[in-house]
Length: 284
Image 1 (tube, helix red, strand yellow):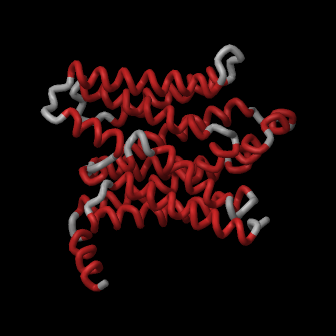
Image 2: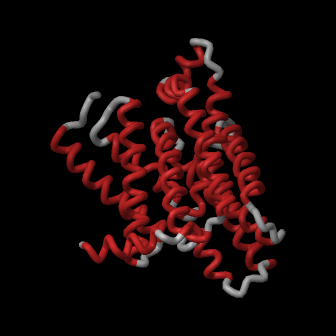
Image 3: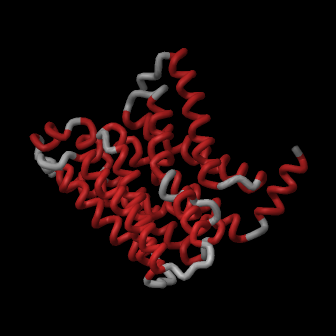
């Protein structure tokens, strides 16, 4: 045990490891807050769809040889989030079909662009890193860390300020509209915030594993707690804990960061599922 702590202390002396842990905690916190809303509104796959859009946007930025691809990726992902929300309300194209179209289309076009125009000598490695977040979390610059901190503060502030409205729109959108709440505006706000979270999480777990980061903590918390507030708080704590545990295990054992974090989330879900079976779930 002492050797493990010594090894961890050694790694923590490197700035890139500290940056990774800070960004990981912030992303875990932000993703867990909106994860509960996505599950309850049955928008779980929107995270998966937007993550593929972000992959396509990163491919475009790579082809354009942009040194900082975050602004472009964020802009394209937010626009697609708005389009998904609008298209999902179209009776001719159902929400799940719209997500599937944009998701598969962005993934295919992104990979095609990388194959046609990329000058990288290790295309497979670049794609693997983008899809699974293998090493990108350990190559963050100080500017990227500060950008993540600012965006995370904005996400948390938006959630706290509009908590009551998000709660009402999540549980009963029709009643919220009847009481004068502009549900369309808050659905749009949720979509934009989710897009920001997706872009932030790309470096942590990669585009294919983002949905797990958003959904698993919420599903785990719902096995035990039943109220929106309790589920949200439990989801946030669990998400941060699993992310920290996954990153530490990854650093010490050399496993892929994203996959290890998701494995920790799966383990936590199984534990909470078993506890929920025996306890019947808490009502508070």
